[in-house]
Amino acid sequence: MIEFSNVTKRYGKIVALDGFSVTIDKPGIYCLLGRNGAGKTTLLKLLAGHIPASKGFVAVNRKTTAPLAMPEEVHFVETGAAQFNMRLADLFKAAADVNPAFNVSFAMELAARFKLDSTKRYKQLSFGMKAMVNTIIAMASGKEILLLDEPVLGFDPVMRKVFYDLLLESCEESPKTVIVSTHIIDEIEKTAERLIIIDKGRLTLFCDMTEIDEKAYCVTGVAEAVREATEGLNVIDETKAGGFVSRYIYDRRIEADGKYSVSALGLTDFFVSLVGDEQNNGEAIQ
Image (tube, rainbow, N blue to C red; front, side, top):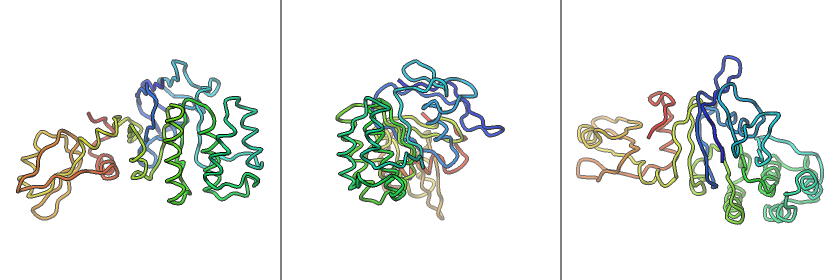
């Protein structure tokens, strides 16, 4: 179980997380979304025990995390992380020496599926291939919690597709909690089971992905009719064009009629509507 309890993290005068609380009590693939500077990487570093909280506490399986008490259950892959300059086959063996739970054969299988040359040294690889090696080491680590910070950065579309397929396979074979922070929203939407959105260091939304399908939609039509139809609903954004208006809703569904249409709202549009302006002020929505 992962628990953030009223966590604040300051870097001097900058508040990266502000009274952040959330509990993750079941395995699965979690999508972590937020604008640049929202606090995503700080959240992951706190969970991995790389940095201390300024206030509140972070716990894994009821044990508080800290730089001197880094949780053994967690493997954190940070953007741009480097490895020893060894041949990949040797690097995987070294990972097993440090971590007895590391699955060398699984790591080699993943490397083959990504067409990585296991005889090459780490520094001989492209940026994208280095990122893939780091992710493979995480997936083969045997840890129950994986933290992936922009794992597909530098991947081409084919590599990204294979990565998400392997992530699903890995979680099916060995249930684990995977938190993926990414800006490529449309792709993670097809893989993630649950969604965490943070804004200005605060939790804005924590829900199952199915809730987005059920409750996020757009109502477009004559302004007066749209506003009347959506009165009392949770309107997260609105755009205007002449006498017409589009309202973005996160609430119970309504049916279309002759004066307005109702259309599905994808995760990208939902995210932009939710955090793209100042109206939410970082407050969680229900």
